[in-house]
Length: 387
Image 1 (cartoon, rainbow, N blue to C red):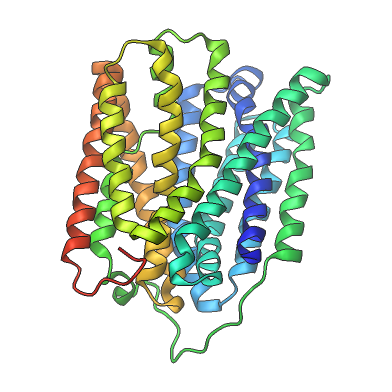
Image 2 (spheres, rainbow, N blue to C red; image 1 turned 90 degrees about the horizontal axis):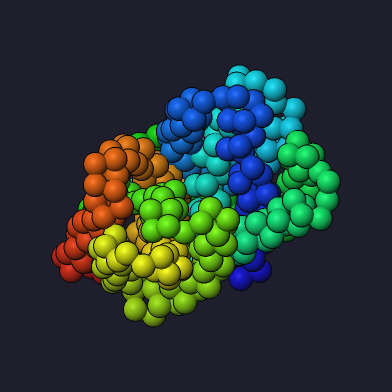
């Protein structure tokens, strides 16, 4: 598990850096630079679409070249450099270039990293490995929020000054990858993989459909914050509610991964999605402000199930030489589905507020969960730890 811990440290420092800068970006972009929120939304959407496509291409390149570690280093390097450089952005083109660079870096690194993580452990350990990785990733987010709070309250740094200091965790990311992350020896194969290999998808394509359906209705944390505001929670309390979400993200992944290894991945994932459907139906209708706190804690539960278990399942479903491309396809389908789904969720919010949007999220989660259970039941040759 030392290699898993090394990858977890990479994500810890990367998320620490992100959570120092991201809470400041909206005000920096809209107030200091005078850019519109509409322009920002379009930039974010375009960057996410590019990143989603690159997740598949980077996975394919990693499989073909057998250099997952260095491709991951290139992706993280692009992301960690773009954040402190934001301190020198004085107009829309610079902000656009840096935000797209950050998302491109994420698209490049995600699939090789997940393939590397899956290769470090056995099939029956993958739920725990991906869960532990998610826990360390989330711990970095908590640390980043706390560091930002300390910088804002106990130093006289400006926003640009804080941006510059994010180079420190960025350097830590690069050092951990170079010094601690191990690239396994490349296994020989008869021929390099094709850019799209149906054999890499055939064993699990019904799961990909279910995952895409779920991603389409996966609500961003922004809708949960809108719900908190709708219930009358004061603006000054919102960061504390978000901190509840980040802390809960540290707690849930390890038990979720342990359950998946003991009870099989598909039933645990389906149970998490059914649970989400019930939570959203109730949360969209309860009028009490106090309900926001358990809502954010439970949101972290099924969000972490979504982040950890599908990659673990796909890693078990395909051979090692196709793993990067398969994981890239999983992430690409999810990323492309989130964009139109978020637009639909926003349109529903404008018409019916939180109750309507949360019902939409509940319906897609329940539909995906039912599909996952049916797929698991109909599989002819289930593999231990894989369904």
